[in-house]
Image 1: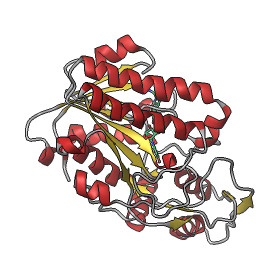
Image 2: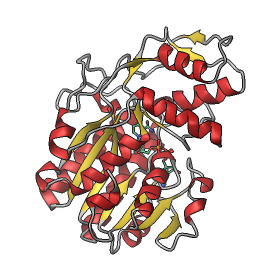
Image 3: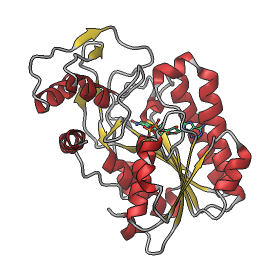
Length: 323
Ligand SMILES: NC(=O)c1ccc[n+]([C@@H]2O[C@H](COP(=O)([O-])OP(=O)(O)OC[C@H]3O[C@@H](n4cnc5c(N)ncnc54)[C@H](O)[C@@H]3O)[C@@H](O)[C@H]2O)c1
């Protein structure tokens, strides 16, 4: 689904976290559809290279700044139709080490985005939530309304975002929609550091002929979601009917892929059959299985993911080899 098809008229978007993985893809899709895009990022975890190609685009403006700065939030949400709020600190293990910082950025920063959007009469805020809100619930597939107790400060911040999102819709009539992303992967995802996501990390190491580490026995599973599905979800969430607002929806492909398979597929595609993964103890705060029920997103957002894990990984590796 193209951004152009969804919005007949040129529309003004603010993308927070625009220099990050998901944010930079959103900017690209919106500019391709001829919309006006304001990007905000403090470059704490994102990279200028991710948005450099858009600097010369007449419809793109970049502001380097922090969502903890309320005055700045007030200024960047002025004359904006839709906010796609992606700015946050990710990573479950890192949040366990620094819970206060996560509260400041992910909760207070998001509150600043909601409050400034309300003040400036933004039409709708679509914000990034996470599958981590399901916490210790053993129920599979994961379905909205069947959340357990959260297992990390990161997950708690996303749960708080959802509570504020709902409150802003019911109390202040600001339309909000939360998207519970399930393990998104794709080009421009940072492969480096202790806190990198598994697919870019495995790919990067395997390309360098190094063996990746698997936490636990490798039988843990995830609903790996290709970036193009996430772009579709954001666009559909902007144009979904008003009765869809004030809620959060699972955004995934709707499949369950075990980690050992991820390793095998990447290893085979990169032709490194001799590499063996290193197994170590499971990580604190990680959930064992994650698999999304998509019926709510299908029904309320008309979300129809088109890229399976296999199609996504093929596209991803093609892009990596080209780079
Ligand atoms: N990638 C995934 O699998 C996944 C899964 C679930 C949820 N999410 C959520 O989706 C969103 C985007 O994730 P991503 O993978 O693109 O992460 P990312 O780290 O690549 O992008 C986040 C961006 O936000 C920016 N940022 C951080 N703190 C900021 C602040 N205080 N002010 C302004 N900018 C700030 C960073 O510099 C970065 O560019 C996040 O909210 C994340 O929690 C991602």
